[in-house]
Image 1 (cartoon, rainbow, N blue to C red):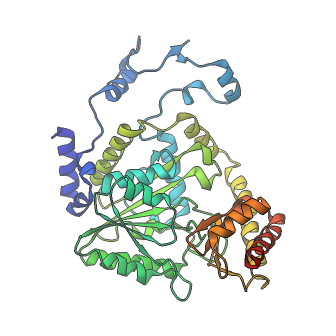
Image 2: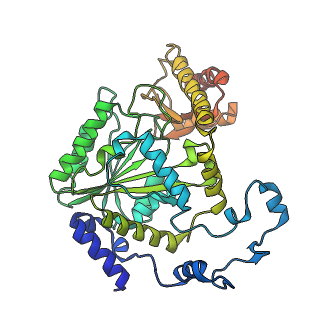
Length: 432
């Protein structure tokens, strides 16, 4: 065994043997090489004052070589902040600012022992890192039956884990914490599970309220007290887009340091929060009771990054960093959030008119980008295709009866026409 792997594993096992037991085979074997190109280049960067012939980039006139046709469009930025490789864990200043932002927006995280956020190639990459580090063949991954389809690809197809589903809503149309608890406790014989909590939920746009969040935390704690080792992932892709009464901060804070059998992980990013989908800048953050343990998990995470993408894109990290440092950032973000809230509120107003009650009802939503119709009279896929072919309207069919509508990309003045057209399409199909 590589000495670095041995040292990391011994640290994790000494600090919390339960978290060591959560690691997958890959998670136990991965490490970030301290001896090699990166470490030698880092050392040369500090000491090679005359010539630095280590890292695989080209220099010209003492700055990164670049093409004018590219730099001309990016002239606001220094070449050093665009063209060299970013560190595997991301730009240090960006990581520090994101942590500062996280603590400000999530008071429940303050005072908890958390890692420095590590930059990922957006949220899917963060989830993939979780899967690599913790999911082995047959491990249970607990998610609601209304979920983002990429979870199956990330955990089940890539890593061979077994998806365990529970209904998202209970009979009162609130978050089904009892169903979550039952799904957790059903894994007692396995002794381990991964839980993914996605709020606001994709596809429904639902975020639990404060009392519901307390019930979720209680369900997780019950599983931990039953001896089940739980990796609990807060997928906060749509964080901050809260439009009504709901939990206003990540549930990650309440899960952090909850129990020795719980490892809380936060996966978030600028992607949706800052409306920079194509920048692919995300973050992964761990909570544990020990700085040594967090450092070891960081090293293993960097090992996964080094072994897959090597490092994230430098320019987009620089763009996000500049935005976070701008005095106009908060005001501009709030302006866009109000537009999104207006679209959500208008959607609910149109749906609450009573005009469509005979053909659908909608699942509760209060946040995020989406809402979901529960169709009463027609098949979702049939409706989706008819809308596309006859009206030029795109929606997402989920199962037999659910149709996801992204109000995020519809201007507020067009929302009423959108739903009236969907209604007309339902009537068309009923006449056939």
